[in-house]
Amino acid sequence: MDQQTVRPARTPARPGGSSDRTGDALAPLLEKLQRIGQLSDDDGAAVRAWPVRLQNARAGSYLLREGQQPRECCLIVEGHAFRSKLTGLGNRQIVSFHMPGDIVDLQHLELRGADHNVQALDEIVVAWIPLDAIRATLEAQPAVARALWRDSLIDGSIFREWILNVGRRDARMRIAHLLCELIYRRGGGRAAHPQQRFALPMSQEQIADATALTPVHVNRMLQHLEAEKLIERERRNFRIRDWAALCSVADFDPAYLHLE
Amino acid sequence: MDQQTVRPARTPARPGGSSDRTGDALAPLLEKLQRIGQLSDDDGAAVRAWPVRLQNARAGSYLLREGQQPRECCLIVEGHAFRSKLTGLGNRQIVSFHMPGDIVDLQHLELRGADHNVQALDEIVVAWIPLDAIRATLEAQPAVARALWRDSLIDGSIFREWILNVGRRDARMRIAHLLCELIYRRGGGRAAHPQQRFALPMSQEQIADATALTPVHVNRMLQHLEAEKLIERERRNFRIRDWAALCSVADFDPAYLHLE
DNA sequence: CGCCGCTTTGACATTGCTCAAAGGATGTGG
DNA sequence: CCACATCCTTTGAGCAATGTCAAAGCGGCG
Image (cartoon, rainbow over the protein chains, first blue to last red):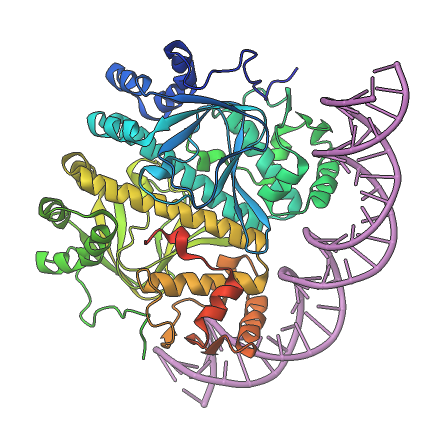
């Protein structure tokens, strides 16, 4: 009944877990790279050889703080995360949401200090991958480098859409657009089973921080979407009643996700 | 007296210009790559060998439209450009400004359809570089690949800051922040001569589209900044009267530009 | 000279925010 | 198994920032 939220494994991953667990950990990443870049067996093997360090974290805990200079990249294995920035006055803006298979701070391959925070959205399992291991692979396996570059370019495209969303759509459209994006990405392209019920991993306050609204207004707009019979909802459990209409309200065109 | 705007050459570049003009065209790019990535002589030579096609364009003309599938990248040689997206209702959001040395659509190395428009801000000279030429260089010269990747990661960082700017700062801060960014980037890091007068290449309507405000409100906020004695202004000509205070009002921290 | 695009001003409308408090879940310790 | 704390969601009333509409200035250019 809970389609969306991938629960952390019952048996908590041991930090520095054994190699079979490690293989599991990289599976969602490999699947994604396969999808966006076509890797050879050698490429896949090189990625699988990355020495990952597993970590469990609870909802809200920081995986990375602004200003840190990490020497590892953070790959999401299970659960969800978000990246955020703070205004000098303390206002928070969430700039992206992430799901299993996403490397959340790939930019540290080239950029020094983190310019934003990364936090767990729900209970989460992440795999830390040494930057040096990735760099070594990039030289030996150009296809991996291309796939990762492509991934970060898609990231950029999503950021541009978010600037548009936050800047030029009204509250109702913003929220609808975010819903569409999350549902679409959950399906890995092709809004899979838009009718099914699912649980969003984020609170209304986090939706507010992603759409640049207040939690109060998010609440009202969700009720509005419900009254329009576009969605059904009960706490964080959603069902889309009219996917086409929701997309239209949201002004949602998935081209920017570049999932083909 | 016009520090900011680089005037298009008096002698208009011929499309498909001769090789000496071509060398000039790539100079700002090489300088930038040098700064962010340390290229060897070979690397530089490979870039200089790119067969560019020069084009003059007047303010407002489109260099690229959403949905197109370009086979060339667009490098700015002189003048300025901006990228924008449109809402289904026709509201425009500018997502970035660009200056000489910027490749404005590097993402087409990996991504198919353009997800946004690119337009000239003022009179401009651009160099079109075949994607295949760039791809060939990426394989042969990994340092060039790294520098370009790094550049696109910085792009992403700027997008994140814009999401924050548009999402969580008020109108006055947004505009001040945009001013700070433009001045800082003009100096290539280190806000060079913040006291000097300069002309912004964009209209107040374009500032509005970049900050997600209306032109009317931009006008009022500029007057407000002037009344606070932070800036001096007469049409598009500006002088910063108090750089430190402006940065503070703007909540501006240049770390996100990653210029070190 | 006269058009045109940009900037500026004014009056008014509205979206979304603030503040405050109440209602529900869920979990924990006694 | 209850009592309570906590975290989220929901509601209400009033307000502020920003948008809308309309028109007037003002510079530059053909």
